[in-house]
Length: 214
Image (cartoon, rainbow, N blue to C red; front, side):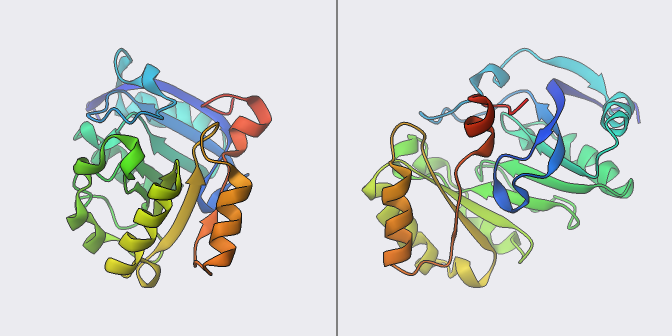
């Protein structure tokens, strides 16, 4: 329990996206990310943070008395000790999700953890960072998120879904980039094409107009 991680913040809010949207959740935001997506809304987590022991993190999470915990970033898997944190949270009975870019290997993630994994679309600027071997480690409880900025992203996402039979493997999320992709247009395309995906708008931005939701 002497392991340390660099933490940007730990806070309590409503889950803003994924399939637990709206549920009270404790967010543990780790510092650092090897990607630089053009739409990133958490660039403040790229650097800085505070080295925090695993026992301190667990105590801070417990103080909120909340069943759901999301480990996010940055890119949480950029810190190897993230795997220890995830395992200890699951051991303590939390419903734990991991928000990851999909650029780093997820094979070591405890199977009790719900993986919410991006596949970076062309407009992200990080298309070449997708680690497609991660798809083999996804299960029906996991989710793949496509962040859509334009029709090119939409068509690419449809093609990737088909190529990797993603709808048969895990849950799928389509999310419009705020201020860039009209959400109504994206919703209508999903309905038109009968896509088996969950359309989502980031709830925290609607409620608080910020990246964190607190």
